[in-house]
Image 1: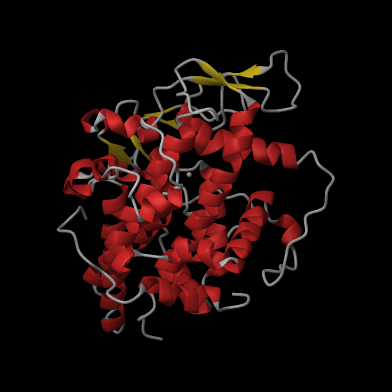
Image 2 (image 1 turned 90 degrees about the horizontal axis):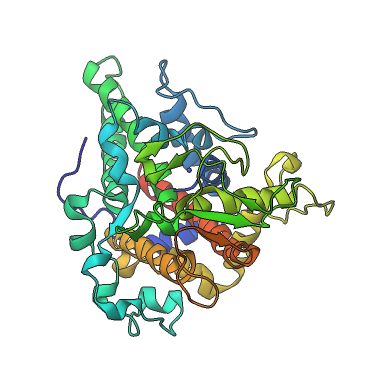
Length: 403
């Protein structure tokens, strides 16, 4: 199903519902494959039992699964399909879905004043853009015509999932009807797309400049980002297989291999995460997984997921941070996704496209290790926020599901 008119989905206080469901409970790839799987696994950890049962039933309930995914163990059912949308876009059936993974900000239409550095924090600019001209923001009518972008896709598939869930509840006694089987398939597709797109919108360069295709046309090198043995201190390749945000596909390469060119977008999709995991694997410092998220076999969880849980717990302990994560202007989901896109757009401008001194990254630049160190906290934060909001979105969708 493609896009219809913009619809407002939840008229209650979205943030309040989520805080009650997630914040009050004790135990309850725009990124590369590892990033999307981590988002899905952590979201699964945060979801309540009823939502897990609903998701599990949709993904694994049919005799003919739509996807046969390979997932680094251990994986939740949601993580098995987290990267499905990045594969589906290359199939004939879903070839139309490529533009739904990102937002192209029409930067050629922005006034020159948008290039100036603001003294406001990202949080201040999102919710109170007094130091940021309105036309410099993400403008849905300008940047997402006919909702053919990641914000529109989240709205569309949230609505599809909610409607199809309601239809299946009402027609639970007619499971052999062909129309019901089609509805079940569409429901599964909607869930797989939604799980992926909520991750995509939190990658800053998935809401970024149209002129350079979200950093894909800014070729870069990595300077001294890894301690792996190499004859050169510059790495010109990268493990992330998909570049141009789905516009092209290259063969999968090894970590920092030199087979494929590296661009700024793929640095944020995969290189920063890869470097974090590679450097962490070399340390003998034990990982301590804080309560209440305790796992019997937590040593099998990736260091990335453990760090995301730590960040989430820190945010829950500081009211202002958690409130920003969970807030939605006017309690509307369409306002939520606009705010999520605005966050990424501002982070792209203030972090992804620039060095620490504010100068712009140019094609052919070698990114120093300082770039990695400065932006790693941003990447970890965005992954964590995406997991929380994915869990919140799915809980809101299935909140009214009949038991």
